[in-house]
Length: 387
Image 1 (cartoon, one colour):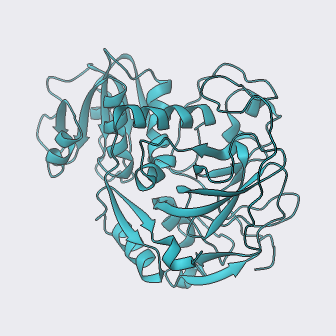
Image 2 (cartoon, helix red, strand yellow):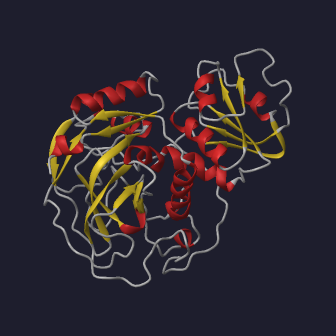
Image 3 (spheres, one colour):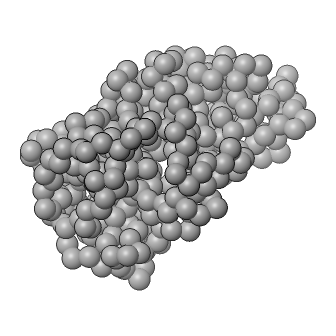
């Protein structure tokens, strides 16, 4: 595929809209604290050849977006801080469907989506210090930021004016359009590549790189932990991670859903209580008792916001992550989240689907019909793309 910039290209909006709480400033050369994993001295890295062309299952256009085509394309020129990842699996996010179906406006077709990638490093640039060939790593919804602006230096690098999303976004210097994780390989700036702890399987970790961090970030920023009562509205892909991570952080956790259909699942995730908003007087006994409520719902038909807000204690926090518009996560938070998941034995609730045209159609259908329990992960990349 020839490099081109579509006039209709729209930045990828990962599901999440998070508040900003300034973190400790990071200097221009990057924090080398315990969570940043940078090596003290750059060492020569072995170079393992990547293919000249990558392969993807791409959506051809808005009118036939489900007719995924297996295509080859030319990645952008390899840079000194780039890492090539041979992809093993990729989680499926609702943002993927919204993007290629045209729900969020135009995008540059043909386009491969997917931004919850886990795989093996097969090539590193000459100035890469955070990974080596053979490492198992992940990459999420963003693949580049300048690392020099005010936002980048203050732990808000997702708001960098030069940030580039994992798919459907042009590189300003070359015009190459990013292609997502429904691909054989991906090429990412090292800062946006994360080591995957040994305790996490690849398919367990992949959906955390978007869905997990989308709820972990506000939970952490708003102080979820021992002594705090946390409510999670909506038990879906995001909501199930909200329950798991809030519990792992030590909070008292309540699931809030329209019915009790998913109550048994919520109990298996460790919740302390369950509220069904379709029941009469559902707020009784809980008004002004919650410190934090994370809303993951995307449907607002009959959504009585005043009733939800009545649950909040004085100075409590309401945060909605189910709408597009913000990124919010930082590298520091991603590394913290992955370590927490490994330490606490957090298990994603996933369905593995072999990647193919038919497999991707199944994954999109499951999103459309709300059949996912609770995230899908595309697998079988070796069979689909070969060595």
